[in-house]
Image 1 (cartoon, each protein chain N blue to C red):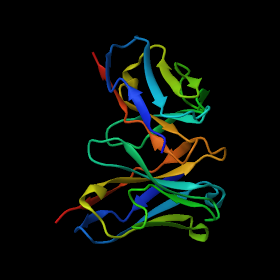
Image 2 (spheres, rainbow over the protein chains, first blue to last red; image 1 turned 90 degrees about the horizontal axis):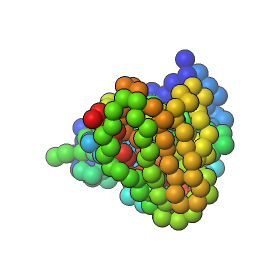
Image 3 (cartoon, rainbow over the protein chains, first blue to last red; image 1 turned 60 degrees about the horizontal axis):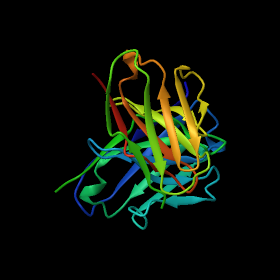
Image 4 (cartoon, rainbow over the protein chains, first blue to last red; image 1 turned 90 degrees about the vertical axis):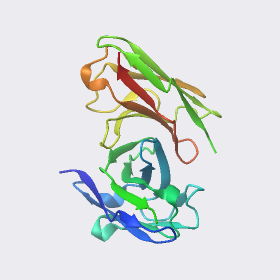
Length: 119
Length: 106
C-alpha cells in the first residue's frame, strides 16, 4: 500500500526539542522530494520545510529557520524533522507530504502527528 | 514571499449548486498552482495541479482555471461529499497556501 505514516509527536515544554519521523512505503521514496506541512488547531495549512530526493536542496519557512532541521534516509525510506527551541506557536499537526515529480503539487500526504508545546 | 488570498473564506451552498472559489497571488505565479480538499481530521487531498489539470481519480465536476495572479476552482454540481475546506497552494517560489475556504451546507 502506498502510504506515509508520521510519528514522534507529543507534549513538550517551550524551549524543548522533538524529532518527527515519516515512514514511506509503496513507492520509490528516493525518487521524490519531500515536505513537512503543519496545521495549528482550527487553522489553515502552512508549509514548513522541503528536501530534495538526494538531500541536495533544503528549504525552510522563515518561521522555523535556524530551529528546525529536515533530513532523510533513503535506505530506510524515512523523512525526519528535528525541532529545537520549540515555541507555543509551533503547536500543530505536522504532515509529511510527497511532491510529485513535476514539482507542481503535493500528491500524497500522511495523516499527521500532533505536536503540543505548552508549559 | 508570495501571499495567497482565497475568497470567500466561507461559502454556503446546496447540493446541486455550481460553486466557484477564487485564489489570488500577490505576484505572478504563471500556472504554478494546486488545489486541495480537506475534511476534518483528515489529510489534504490533491484535486488540481498546474492550475487546471485534474488529478487522477478526482471527479470531473471539479475544474480549475486561471494563470498569472488569479485562479478559480469550480465545482459544477455539488455533491454531499464535497462539503469540506479547500486550499490553494503556489509552487512558483517555494510554497505557500491560501487561508482556506470552508464550503458549508446551506
